[in-house]
Length: 157
Image (cartoon, rainbow, N blue to C red):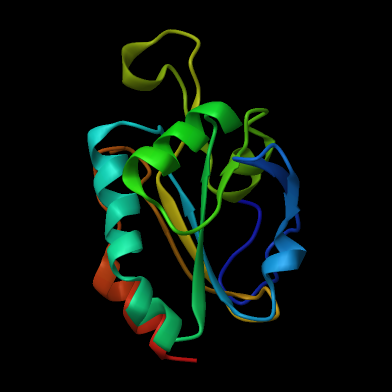
C-alpha cells in the first residue's frame, strides 16, 4: 500500500456499471467508504455488499457513501448490482492498477492460475479524501470487513 491513515487517498478514474468514467474526486465532499472486493457473485462479496446496501440509512445519517471496487468487468458488476439491488456505485478496476496501489491483489485467486483479484479492503475517507481508517484482509479473501469498526470510524469525524 502506497499510503497510510492520515494521508490523502490517491485519485483514480475507473469505469462504472454504465461504462462511464468515475473519479474519486467526484465523490469527495462527503465521507466515502471505498470497499474493494475480490469478485462479484461470490458468497462473501455478496454478503458484504448487501450488508452495505442494508445499512444505507445509517450511512446516510453519518453523511457517508459507499463505492464498491473490484477487478470484475463493468458488465459483471452491472449484473451483480442489479441482482442484489445495490444502491451505490460499483467501479471496475479491470486493469488492476488501482487495486495494486490501494490494497494489493491476490495472485492466482481461488486457485485459478493467472487470475488476479483485489484484496478485500476498506478505506474510510473524510470529505477531503484523507484516509481516516483502513483495513486490508492480507491473506484471507473470505474474511468479512469489521463493519462495527467502519461505523465507529465514520462516526468519529
